[in-house]
Length: 381
Image 1 (cartoon, helix red, strand yellow):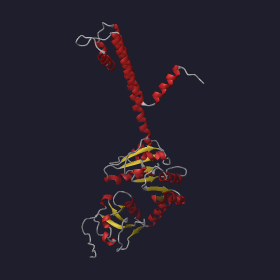
Image 2 (tube, rainbow, N blue to C red):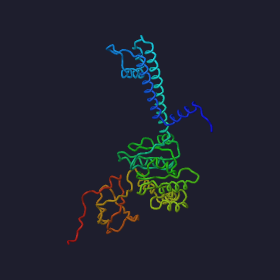
Image 3 (cartoon, rainbow, N blue to C red):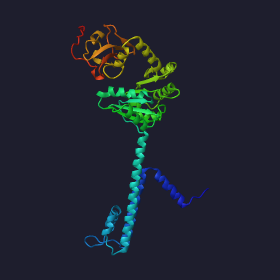
Image 4 (cartoon, rainbow, N blue to C red):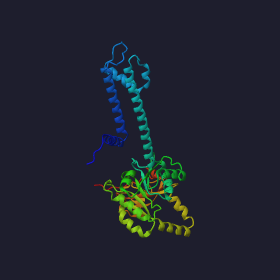
């Protein structure tokens, strides 16, 4: 068995103390100050090397202890001491020098701790403590358009937040957003560095409390596999809340759509980007002006399409619903089973879970007008 010297043991203990962090080091520094002050005060009292107080009496232990503390905190106190007793002056000089050393070390420790904290913030690894925010997983050229549209959509929200998690340096993401997107108004954009397929990294952006989650395919070799892995990490996390996520993901290759649907089940809305763009391109070529209609309905400038459930409409027919909105135009219903019906039968009666599909300026303008509501006749019993 190897024998360690006392120096090696002390060095090992010192390294362990330093590794515990700033609080532990500060605690040991304060403890060393207390020990030195007490020892010097005891020596001063035992050797009768204490200075006289204001009444001319020799100081006791408590007064000597206080005097030593003042010398430790303020080195200028030494200039006011009585130089008649060289031992007392020497003891106070020791305390003063030790105080200067300790407080210099304390300043250095605090400075290093602040620098380390700033470095951690630049790494983007702190947890996002938000509720009702939008989470974006991944980084691609589409992220700038998405954030620009979300900023417009959140213009009427007092404290909207977008959290981005991507395997990109946090500072690089912030610089790119500042250059490509510009001011975001009331919407705060929070960037975090991490992998969207790692459970520990996903927890950083707090997906459990998110209003919606957008998964981007990125620029990887197999982008669809990355999207599917991200959905698996979200839906199979054993620590996640019981409520369902609202996930929107893009799929590049239509052949991978079926696999993505099996993974996302009814929790994810999947967009086959390549096929969708191809269909839109063909239709806009065949119909002049159709591109303007698509832009008007799909971006957040002007009017958009909104889905909203209105409990006050239960038991009313679709024909009645058409007359109840003044600032919106009702175009159909999303039934409780998920089926979307445009222009349903006028006598269709709305049930619990049915949502109105309306074209409106913003989500807060899809509201009942408050007048012109037909009276529903009820049978007398």
